Amino acid sequence: MLAILTYIKYVPVAVLRPPCDRAARYDFFTSSKPLLMSTDFHYCPACATPLALISVQEDGGPKDRLRCPACGWTHWNNPVPVLAAVVEVQGQILLARNAAWEGKMYALITGFMEAGETPQEGIAREIKEETNLQALELNLIGVYDFERMNQLIVAYHARCEGEIRLSPELVDYRLFAPDKVKCWPAGTGYALADWLRSRGHEPQFIEWSRPPQDHAPPA
Image (cartoon, rainbow, N blue to C red; front, side, top):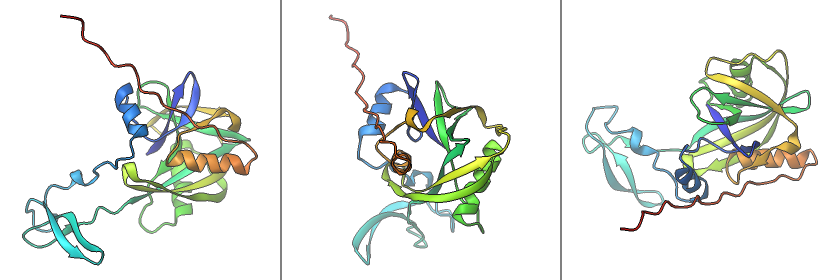
């Protein structure tokens, strides 16, 4: 998994998996409404009964959740922890592009933890798997909420060395000076901004403008 960096006039911008359509991308960036992440569950994994949105009294009061009306199984929809790294190679930041992405979209290295590993082990593994780089030093940047994707981002600065060889899911990479990237105002963008400040750089945040709407020709 990667945190997308979209090029705006060839300036890399730290963002996270936006839609390709311009109007949808604007709404994705600017809306504060969380995405509904529970739609992946349609049936109870315990008894296969279709799930229903059911209100139950919990410790904090009544709560609507997807629940099984037959056996009571509950889809808690807890935020998913995501590991992220500002990968530094010889003083530059490495960004990579996924083969499935359209346009000039590059990314920070991110991924999920495996069972039995620490966050540090997890991000070092992701860096190795996706770039072949060895993490020499890992320092926690911070923990950031990303409600739009129901994620909790644990971000590290990773000082790395080695010969860069991309995994099959990546098709390209580029190295940038820290002062050449812009941050988007959410998730990994805040992590990158905090790291830039720690290095004496004042982060710049991208401002998204709504694209012009198409107008129907006069009748």
